[in-house]
Image: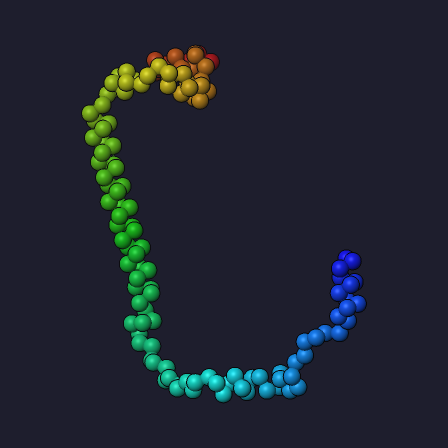
Length: 128
């Protein structure tokens, strides 16, 4: 702060930079004189194909997407049918480790009695 006041006292408060007279009035015409002339180009006619091309591409994209989804769905259903036919329920239950069965039962929110009735295919309405 002390240095600022010393500088102001030594140099003064007036602005040392000045703009030449009429500079801003003449700057735009001077710049325009230095630019090269641009030839006006006529606009090309837009053909029907150029107008329709984005729509055709979009339709082709959606058709390809639907076709690929159908192919994937058919492959998955064929694999699922083969897996179901080849694997029995006992094979599936025997391959599940015991450490996974406990969390599955907790998430099923079934008490022991309901689980027993479900596994034995008993009718719950008889016992209620």
